[in-house]
Length: 344
Image 1: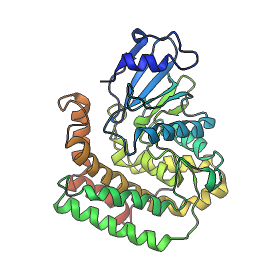
Image 2: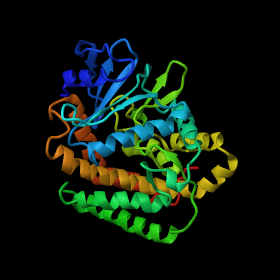
Image 3: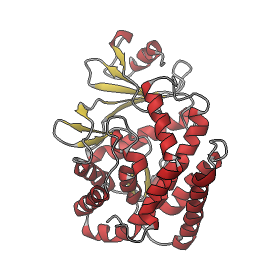
Image 4: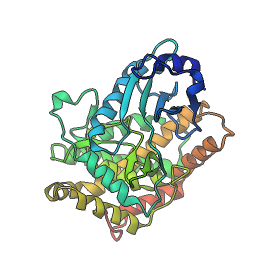
Protein backbone atom coordinates (compact mmCIF):
# COMPACT_ATOMS: atom_id res chain seq x y z
CA UNK A 1 0.00 0.00 0.00
CA UNK A 2 1.67 3.26 -1.06
CA UNK A 3 2.01 6.12 1.41
CA UNK A 4 -0.45 8.59 -0.10
CA UNK A 5 0.51 11.37 2.31
CA UNK A 6 4.16 11.13 1.25
CA UNK A 7 3.11 10.98 -2.38
CA UNK A 8 0.97 14.09 -2.01
CA UNK A 9 3.90 16.02 -0.52
CA UNK A 10 6.18 14.92 -3.35
CA UNK A 11 3.60 15.77 -6.01
CA UNK A 12 3.03 19.23 -4.54
CA UNK A 13 6.60 20.09 -5.59
CA UNK A 14 5.74 19.41 -9.26
CA UNK A 15 4.99 22.60 -11.21
CA UNK A 16 1.24 23.07 -11.46
CA UNK A 17 0.45 20.69 -8.59
CA UNK A 18 1.23 22.90 -5.58
CA UNK A 19 -2.37 22.78 -4.37
CA UNK A 20 -2.55 18.98 -4.41
CA UNK A 21 -3.59 17.30 -1.17
CA UNK A 22 -3.83 13.69 0.00
CA UNK A 23 -7.62 13.87 -0.40
CA UNK A 24 -7.09 14.44 -4.13
CA UNK A 25 -5.40 11.05 -4.55
CA UNK A 26 -7.29 7.88 -5.46
CA UNK A 27 -5.52 4.52 -5.34
CA UNK A 28 -6.71 2.56 -8.37
CA UNK A 29 -7.51 -1.18 -8.34
CA UNK A 30 -4.57 -3.51 -8.94
CA UNK A 31 -3.92 -3.92 -12.67
CA UNK A 32 -0.40 -5.21 -13.12
CA UNK A 33 2.40 -6.60 -11.03
CA UNK A 34 5.07 -3.91 -11.02
CA UNK A 35 3.32 -0.63 -10.16
CA UNK A 36 0.62 0.95 -8.06
CA UNK A 37 -1.40 3.60 -9.88
CA UNK A 38 -2.88 6.66 -8.19
CA UNK A 39 -5.30 9.05 -9.90
CA UNK A 40 -4.84 12.78 -9.31
CA UNK A 41 -8.50 13.75 -9.13
CA UNK A 42 -9.64 16.42 -11.55
CA UNK A 43 -6.26 16.78 -13.24
CA UNK A 44 -6.28 14.05 -15.88
CA UNK A 45 -3.07 12.62 -14.45
CA UNK A 46 -1.86 9.32 -12.99
CA UNK A 47 1.06 8.70 -10.63
CA UNK A 48 2.88 5.41 -11.27
CA UNK A 49 4.70 4.08 -8.21
CA UNK A 50 7.06 1.12 -8.66
CA UNK A 51 6.35 -1.56 -6.09
CA UNK A 52 9.25 -2.38 -3.75
CA UNK A 53 10.71 -5.79 -4.50
CA UNK A 54 9.53 -5.81 -8.12
CA UNK A 55 12.41 -3.85 -9.64
CA UNK A 56 15.23 -5.52 -11.56
CA UNK A 57 17.43 -2.45 -11.05
CA UNK A 58 17.65 0.01 -8.11
CA UNK A 59 15.02 2.79 -7.99
CA UNK A 60 17.64 5.49 -8.52
CA UNK A 61 18.30 3.94 -11.94
CA UNK A 62 14.78 2.71 -12.63
CA UNK A 63 13.06 6.11 -12.48
CA UNK A 64 15.46 7.68 -15.02
CA UNK A 65 15.00 4.61 -17.23
CA UNK A 66 11.22 4.98 -17.08
CA UNK A 67 11.49 8.69 -17.76
CA UNK A 68 13.66 8.07 -20.81
CA UNK A 69 11.25 5.38 -22.04
CA UNK A 70 8.27 7.73 -21.94
CA UNK A 71 10.21 10.62 -23.48
CA UNK A 72 11.60 8.53 -26.37
CA UNK A 73 8.23 6.94 -27.16
CA UNK A 74 6.16 10.11 -26.76
CA UNK A 75 6.57 11.44 -30.33
CA UNK A 76 4.76 8.35 -31.64
CA UNK A 77 1.47 9.77 -30.37
CA UNK A 78 0.60 6.33 -29.01
CA UNK A 79 1.87 6.55 -25.42
CA UNK A 80 0.80 8.70 -22.45
CA UNK A 81 2.41 12.12 -22.10
CA UNK A 82 5.07 12.30 -19.39
CA UNK A 83 4.53 15.16 -16.93
CA UNK A 84 7.19 14.65 -14.27
CA UNK A 85 9.62 12.17 -12.76
CA UNK A 86 9.98 12.12 -8.97
CA UNK A 87 13.29 10.80 -7.71
CA UNK A 88 13.36 8.23 -4.88
CA UNK A 89 13.58 9.67 -1.38
CA UNK A 90 13.33 8.35 2.18
CA UNK A 91 9.63 9.24 2.18
CA UNK A 92 9.02 7.77 -1.30
CA UNK A 93 11.67 5.03 -1.65
CA UNK A 94 10.76 3.91 -5.17
CA UNK A 95 10.04 7.35 -6.60
CA UNK A 96 7.21 7.92 -9.07
CA UNK A 97 6.29 9.08 -12.54
CA UNK A 98 3.41 11.43 -13.29
CA UNK A 99 1.80 10.74 -16.67
CA UNK A 100 -1.30 11.61 -18.63
CA UNK A 101 -4.36 9.57 -17.70
CA UNK A 102 -5.72 7.82 -20.77
CA UNK A 103 -9.50 7.71 -20.82
CA UNK A 104 -10.16 4.50 -22.68
CA UNK A 105 -11.06 0.83 -22.61
CA UNK A 106 -9.30 -2.46 -23.11
CA UNK A 107 -8.88 -3.46 -26.77
CA UNK A 108 -11.24 -6.09 -28.11
CA UNK A 109 -9.09 -9.04 -29.14
CA UNK A 110 -8.82 -10.28 -31.84
CA UNK A 111 -11.10 -7.75 -33.55
CA UNK A 112 -8.87 -4.77 -32.73
CA UNK A 113 -5.45 -6.28 -33.30
CA UNK A 114 -5.08 -3.81 -36.19
CA UNK A 115 -5.07 -0.94 -33.67
CA UNK A 116 -2.13 -2.55 -31.88
CA UNK A 117 -0.36 -3.05 -35.21
CA UNK A 118 -0.74 0.67 -35.94
CA UNK A 119 0.53 1.61 -32.46
CA UNK A 120 3.64 -0.54 -32.83
CA UNK A 121 4.30 0.65 -36.37
CA UNK A 122 4.29 4.26 -35.10
CA UNK A 123 6.66 3.51 -32.23
CA UNK A 124 9.01 1.45 -34.39
CA UNK A 125 9.04 4.22 -36.98
CA UNK A 126 10.62 6.75 -34.64
CA UNK A 127 14.20 7.83 -35.48
CA UNK A 128 16.88 5.68 -33.86
CA UNK A 129 19.73 7.69 -32.32
CA UNK A 130 23.35 6.65 -32.85
CA UNK A 131 24.69 4.11 -30.34
CA UNK A 132 26.41 6.73 -28.17
CA UNK A 133 23.06 8.49 -27.58
CA UNK A 134 20.86 5.50 -26.76
CA UNK A 135 21.60 5.37 -23.03
CA UNK A 136 20.09 4.98 -20.51
CA UNK A 137 17.94 2.62 -22.56
CA UNK A 138 19.34 -0.84 -23.19
CA UNK A 139 20.88 -1.25 -26.63
CA UNK A 140 20.32 -4.65 -28.21
CA UNK A 141 22.02 -3.78 -31.49
CA UNK A 142 22.42 -7.55 -31.83
CA UNK A 143 18.85 -8.34 -30.85
CA UNK A 144 19.43 -12.10 -30.74
CA UNK A 145 22.40 -11.82 -28.38
CA UNK A 146 20.63 -9.21 -26.26
CA UNK A 147 17.51 -11.34 -25.87
CA UNK A 148 19.53 -14.47 -25.20
CA UNK A 149 21.39 -12.66 -22.41
CA UNK A 150 18.05 -11.96 -20.73
CA UNK A 151 17.03 -15.61 -21.16
CA UNK A 152 20.33 -16.87 -19.70
CA UNK A 153 19.74 -14.83 -16.53
CA UNK A 154 16.16 -16.04 -16.21
CA UNK A 155 16.87 -19.71 -16.88
CA UNK A 156 18.71 -19.82 -13.54
CA UNK A 157 15.23 -19.85 -11.98
CA UNK A 158 14.31 -23.28 -13.35
CA UNK A 159 15.39 -25.06 -10.16
CA UNK A 160 13.95 -22.53 -7.67
CA UNK A 161 10.67 -22.59 -9.62
CA UNK A 162 10.54 -26.38 -9.45
CA UNK A 163 10.38 -26.84 -13.22
CA UNK A 164 11.09 -30.48 -14.02
CA UNK A 165 10.14 -33.34 -16.31
CA UNK A 166 8.81 -32.66 -19.80
CA UNK A 167 8.50 -28.91 -19.21
CA UNK A 168 12.14 -28.59 -18.22
CA UNK A 169 13.28 -30.79 -21.09
CA UNK A 170 11.39 -28.63 -23.59
CA UNK A 171 12.77 -25.38 -22.18
CA UNK A 172 16.31 -26.75 -22.22
CA UNK A 173 15.80 -27.93 -25.80
CA UNK A 174 14.67 -24.43 -26.80
CA UNK A 175 17.63 -22.94 -24.96
CA UNK A 176 19.99 -25.16 -26.95
CA UNK A 177 18.31 -23.97 -30.16
CA UNK A 178 18.57 -20.33 -29.05
CA UNK A 179 22.29 -20.64 -28.31
CA UNK A 180 22.88 -22.22 -31.69
CA UNK A 181 20.82 -19.59 -33.48
CA UNK A 182 22.74 -16.83 -31.70
CA UNK A 183 26.03 -18.30 -32.91
CA UNK A 184 24.76 -18.79 -36.46
CA UNK A 185 23.26 -15.29 -36.74
CA UNK A 186 26.11 -13.36 -35.07
CA UNK A 187 27.04 -10.42 -37.24
CA UNK A 188 23.95 -10.66 -39.44
CA UNK A 189 22.26 -7.31 -39.97
CA UNK A 190 18.80 -6.99 -38.47
CA UNK A 191 16.57 -3.89 -38.33
CA UNK A 192 16.84 -2.03 -35.01
CA UNK A 193 14.11 0.23 -33.65
CA UNK A 194 12.80 1.64 -30.41
CA UNK A 195 10.81 -1.31 -29.07
CA UNK A 196 8.54 -1.63 -26.05
CA UNK A 197 9.44 -5.21 -25.01
CA UNK A 198 6.21 -5.71 -23.03
CA UNK A 199 3.47 -5.49 -25.65
CA UNK A 200 0.81 -7.96 -24.51
CA UNK A 201 -2.74 -6.77 -25.30
CA UNK A 202 -3.49 -5.84 -21.69
CA UNK A 203 -0.94 -3.04 -21.87
CA UNK A 204 -3.07 -0.95 -24.25
CA UNK A 205 -6.10 1.26 -23.90
CA UNK A 206 -8.26 2.33 -26.84
CA UNK A 207 -9.00 6.05 -26.49
CA UNK A 208 -12.00 8.03 -27.70
CA UNK A 209 -10.44 8.59 -31.11
CA UNK A 210 -9.97 4.86 -31.66
CA UNK A 211 -6.21 4.81 -31.16
CA UNK A 212 -4.51 2.04 -29.20
CA UNK A 213 -2.33 3.70 -26.57
CA UNK A 214 0.49 1.66 -25.04
CA UNK A 215 0.33 2.59 -21.36
CA UNK A 216 3.14 0.42 -19.93
CA UNK A 217 6.16 2.07 -21.48
CA UNK A 218 8.92 1.62 -18.92
CA UNK A 219 10.79 -1.24 -20.62
CA UNK A 220 11.69 0.51 -23.87
CA UNK A 221 14.98 -0.47 -25.48
CA UNK A 222 16.64 -0.46 -28.88
CA UNK A 223 16.24 -3.86 -30.48
CA UNK A 224 14.23 -5.91 -32.96
CA UNK A 225 10.67 -4.88 -33.88
CA UNK A 226 10.00 -8.59 -34.37
CA UNK A 227 10.10 -9.08 -30.59
CA UNK A 228 7.22 -6.65 -30.06
CA UNK A 229 5.17 -8.36 -32.75
CA UNK A 230 5.75 -11.74 -31.15
CA UNK A 231 4.99 -10.56 -27.65
CA UNK A 232 1.72 -9.02 -28.80
CA UNK A 233 0.42 -12.31 -30.17
CA UNK A 234 2.00 -15.30 -28.40
CA UNK A 235 -0.30 -17.40 -26.21
CA UNK A 236 1.76 -16.49 -23.15
CA UNK A 237 0.94 -12.83 -23.82
CA UNK A 238 -2.62 -12.85 -25.11
CA UNK A 239 -3.94 -14.90 -22.18
CA UNK A 240 -2.06 -12.95 -19.51
CA UNK A 241 -4.45 -10.08 -18.82
CA UNK A 242 -7.82 -10.48 -17.13
CA UNK A 243 -9.56 -7.99 -19.43
CA UNK A 244 -8.12 -9.06 -22.78
CA UNK A 245 -7.26 -12.73 -22.25
CA UNK A 246 -7.90 -14.85 -25.32
CA UNK A 247 -6.02 -17.51 -27.27
CA UNK A 248 -5.55 -16.38 -30.87
CA UNK A 249 -6.17 -18.55 -33.90
CA UNK A 250 -3.24 -18.89 -36.34
CA UNK A 251 -5.25 -16.85 -38.83
CA UNK A 252 -5.53 -13.98 -36.33
CA UNK A 253 -1.77 -14.03 -35.79
CA UNK A 254 -0.99 -14.12 -39.49
CA UNK A 255 -3.43 -11.27 -40.11
CA UNK A 256 -1.77 -9.14 -37.43
CA UNK A 257 1.66 -9.62 -38.98
CA UNK A 258 0.36 -8.79 -42.46
CA UNK A 259 -1.38 -5.69 -41.12
CA UNK A 260 1.76 -4.46 -39.37
CA UNK A 261 4.02 -5.09 -42.37
CA UNK A 262 1.61 -3.16 -44.61
CA UNK A 263 1.97 -0.12 -42.33
CA UNK A 264 5.76 0.18 -42.44
CA UNK A 265 8.20 1.06 -45.19
CA UNK A 266 8.24 -1.79 -47.76
CA UNK A 267 12.03 -1.97 -47.72
CA UNK A 268 11.99 -2.32 -43.93
CA UNK A 269 9.30 -4.99 -44.17
CA UNK A 270 11.48 -7.02 -46.55
CA UNK A 271 14.50 -6.74 -44.23
CA UNK A 272 12.43 -7.70 -41.22
CA UNK A 273 10.68 -10.67 -42.83
CA UNK A 274 13.38 -13.35 -42.32
CA UNK A 275 13.59 -12.51 -38.62
CA UNK A 276 9.91 -12.78 -37.75
CA UNK A 277 9.72 -16.54 -37.11
CA UNK A 278 13.03 -17.02 -35.21
CA UNK A 279 12.48 -13.93 -33.05
CA UNK A 280 8.99 -15.19 -32.24
CA UNK A 281 10.49 -18.45 -31.02
CA UNK A 282 13.13 -16.58 -29.02
CA UNK A 283 10.50 -14.27 -27.50
CA UNK A 284 8.47 -17.25 -26.31
CA UNK A 285 11.56 -18.58 -24.54
CA UNK A 286 12.20 -15.16 -22.99
CA UNK A 287 8.62 -15.02 -21.74
CA UNK A 288 8.57 -18.58 -20.43
CA UNK A 289 11.85 -18.26 -18.54
CA UNK A 290 10.49 -14.99 -17.12
CA UNK A 291 7.53 -17.04 -15.83
CA UNK A 292 10.05 -19.30 -14.06
CA UNK A 293 11.74 -16.30 -12.47
CA UNK A 294 8.40 -14.76 -11.48
CA UNK A 295 7.23 -18.01 -9.89
CA UNK A 296 10.45 -18.36 -7.90
CA UNK A 297 11.14 -14.74 -6.94
CA UNK A 298 7.71 -13.10 -6.73
CA UNK A 299 5.03 -15.71 -6.15
CA UNK A 300 7.40 -17.85 -4.12
CA UNK A 301 7.92 -15.15 -1.50
CA UNK A 302 4.44 -13.62 -1.64
CA UNK A 303 5.61 -10.36 -3.20
CA UNK A 304 2.77 -10.25 -5.75
CA UNK A 305 0.23 -9.30 -3.08
CA UNK A 306 -2.55 -11.07 -1.20
CA UNK A 307 -2.55 -14.71 -2.44
CA UNK A 308 -6.32 -14.78 -2.05
CA UNK A 309 -7.00 -11.73 -4.19
CA UNK A 310 -8.64 -12.34 -7.59
CA UNK A 311 -5.69 -10.73 -9.38
CA UNK A 312 -2.99 -12.82 -7.71
CA UNK A 313 -5.05 -15.99 -8.20
CA UNK A 314 -5.32 -15.11 -11.90
CA UNK A 315 -1.58 -14.47 -12.23
CA UNK A 316 -0.74 -17.70 -10.41
CA UNK A 317 -3.04 -19.65 -12.71
CA UNK A 318 -1.46 -18.09 -15.80
CA UNK A 319 2.08 -18.94 -14.64
CA UNK A 320 1.02 -22.52 -13.91
CA UNK A 321 -0.51 -22.79 -17.38
CA UNK A 322 2.56 -21.34 -19.11
CA UNK A 323 4.79 -23.93 -17.43
CA UNK A 324 2.44 -26.85 -18.04
CA UNK A 325 4.05 -29.43 -20.36
CA UNK A 326 0.90 -29.66 -22.50
CA UNK A 327 0.81 -25.89 -23.01
CA UNK A 328 4.49 -25.77 -23.88
CA UNK A 329 4.10 -28.61 -26.38
CA UNK A 330 1.11 -26.93 -28.02
CA UNK A 331 2.96 -23.62 -28.43
CA UNK A 332 6.15 -25.24 -29.73
CA UNK A 333 4.08 -27.02 -32.36
CA UNK A 334 4.01 -23.68 -34.20
CA UNK A 335 7.71 -23.85 -35.09
CA UNK A 336 8.47 -27.54 -34.78
CA UNK A 337 5.78 -28.55 -37.29
CA UNK A 338 6.90 -27.65 -40.79
CA UNK A 339 3.27 -27.58 -41.94
CA UNK A 340 2.38 -24.77 -39.53
CA UNK A 341 2.05 -21.38 -41.30
CA UNK A 342 4.77 -18.91 -40.24
CA UNK A 343 4.11 -15.24 -39.46
CA UNK A 344 4.76 -12.59 -42.04
